[in-house]
Image (cartoon, rainbow, N blue to C red; front, side):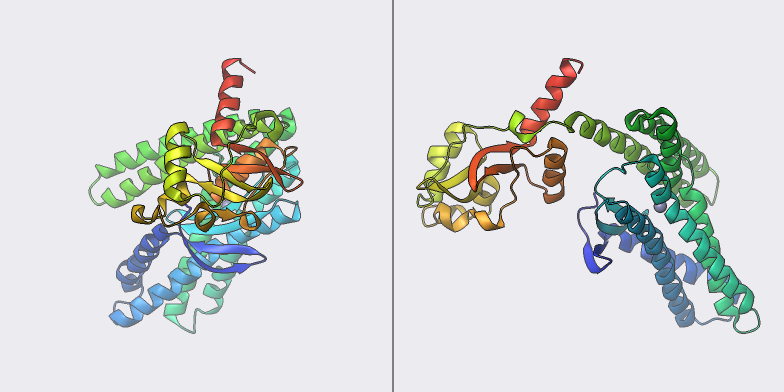
Length: 374
Ligand SMILES: [Zn+2]
């Protein structure tokens, strides 16, 4: 859902992106401020001033959301957890934190960093609100709203349902007490699901109250998102627990049919893909791996060029290829596949392709263990 987004820069090595859904909420907030909030502050304000004030306030609001996420990320990095990106989307912001924390204490600090930042920012805006009383009624209104929204952001995020920050706080405490991250996550994400259902229920009730249709739908929508996120994050962790401690060499496909770089794409399709159903082939000549060609690469070439183009023209060269080593952890493989949005990677040892590992290998490994109750 959050794959797509427009990169707008990076801070501390973390890429900042705007998801397409963010523009909807940016527009809605600006509109609600310009058409709903500012007229109640001062009915004599011109439309142009209200829109300009709405835009400034929105930008400062989403800047505050970004600061909240950024503090999570900075703390995560401090505890040795790489953070790839922060994406602003329709429900706020999300940090792509690639690993679970090592210790409950780390998780507690990472989780609290965001809401505390929001509280501090809220306090600063309320300070401005207090000091600007005699200066400008518009500045006062903007500062008051931003103070209020940041405090609301902190309070909302402290709801103890995983994966909200409060749920992470709860998880870190359960984890610290019971020493099982998986069990703590299960409890915290069940509470997260419960809160999601509660939001959906409250939202649907609101829908029937005149004047609250939009708020009701919005609340139900947030509840639905929370419920999904709670289930998703638990499943992901459960999967990682199964995969951790196992290596690529245990599950990789070793007998990999290789292809010659100088055959045409047409030949590749006829002789290698259609007969076998395989989707990915190491390209090898004189026992030297040149690269890899996948069904995905082939699909990118128009059919009338299949005779003219060779495997060499279309393949991903070795130098640009994502690869794993036989000793690498399976959880890392899952992470690579997910991050790069690819289905398989070659397994490389001493610059030779010794096999392939993909989503299907991981799936087979996981489902077999599930069936055996391991
Ligand atoms: Zn947060």
